[in-house]
Length: 398
Image (cartoon, rainbow, N blue to C red; front, side):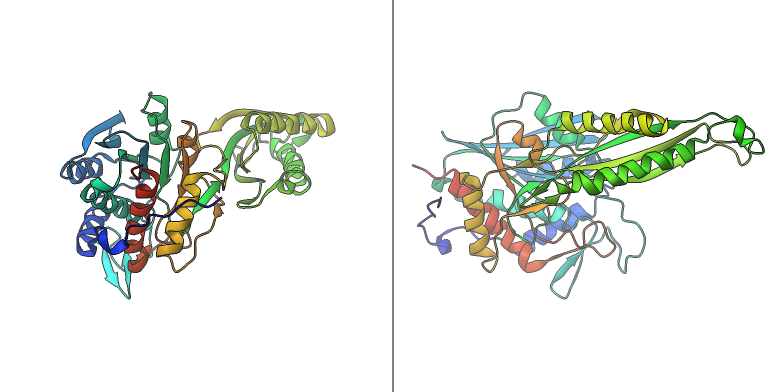
């Protein structure tokens, strides 16, 4: 399926203003939104001012103290609703930076700073695209939205809150994440069960009088590894690769001379599109039951830790995918995709509204979450054009 392209010459469209984009990104990088602890309020207020100046109707949705979503709406006649979305929070800056992580620094064709690619760079490019679309409002009809959410880096609480509170219908969305300006149409999901393995405490000098929970956990871990190697990783998806099951944390015992009566394991289960969360949870319960049957291991899931969410995919034939691929090819040296994320993002939550969408943004995950995070300037500017052209295509008149 091929989506018709806009026949108006690109030169007739408003073009990105790099100096303005750089000022926006510098301001956003300069507002610390590290998560944890998580505090998006100051950044949300700044975003409110930027978009209000362009004629958007603004709403700040504070679902917890300091945890804020920005919802901006620009109505421009009858037609579909198109939304830009990305997240306001960043991971902590950490150590090892050569420059101040909260001062945007330009060098060698790159802009450095915490969040420069994940995801304040995409956000600044989306804001610029909003300006360009308002300036070209005679070219499209419908409702343009910018939904900037909190807490994506830990549990996507902001996106979950937004979709749970009866938002207006959104027909199409582009999610801003670092993809080197390629279109990603699928991403993995995650579950993190906290499993407690039970034992019986005893003096460490008389271990035969107790049951060592760490030994029992070791028996369970053998089954976890076997299940990953022989079942889970065999579930593959063309764009995101294989599902997985591993352990990322372990804690057991409370004293040097006491046999541990409990050992906690944090499992990390990555799901691929097509896997059902309820089925995966049932499979984990079956694994614990097998450990008891084979080894007498007594274990239970204490809780499922909050994560970004489930897996999702937007079909290649969807118009938003075709428009995204066309815009990426036009402004990204012919490189378009489609590709898939190994991790998660907020696309899945917008898909729950019936929205079709893609994930696109400047920068690469290879430098996200690391010291000296950066966004290439050429990709940063090109992203504004990509975002502009996708929205124009999805809301074009006629």
